[in-house]
Image 1 (cartoon, helix red, strand yellow):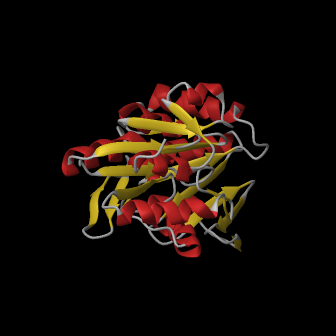
Image 2: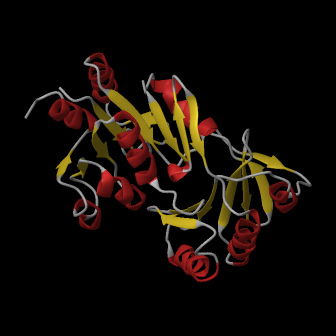
Length: 260
């Protein structure tokens, strides 16, 4: 029997905020690994941000595809690849986002920093801390490499995000890649997306690939996985990129283990 691997989006797929969507998902993921198969979480979160739900809910994994495909981590081998974006292009995009009054985020390897309506914060999972007299742009310029910057429109709409996306596509198409999520625009190194980790591990491990996600930035992994799943509850525009829809992650695991 050929080994299988399940790629699981995190936010909106197995967790929502600080809550687990279905406790049975955790049990079934462990059952999948006990049967000799592999599990990878495929998320826009960085390495620091992903640790909180992994530890809080006891989510077991073999690989982490992080920052929308920019960083691939193996539990046994450590980092397998790590791509960073052009710093000058990223800085220009930050300035444009501020001009459009869009909330911006970047990760320095330890903390996630946020700039919103003229104020700077540390915005690690668990809450924000206001930073007085903090040089947000200067700190960004001082980094040796950035794997991901994220943008959020406070009213939960995407009109200004799409203006920023058009600006990126027009001015920095060769330097970065932008991915629109439900309420976010994530920018990473060129060629990076959630499909990159799927393709890399499929070739490295010679495995049959399954995946499940709930949003537009999951489409690249839907397109390269052998079997792609999403949920009955998501937009039809997302469903059309998958072969089947379910209600919970554990139902995909059952299919992988030979269930109906």
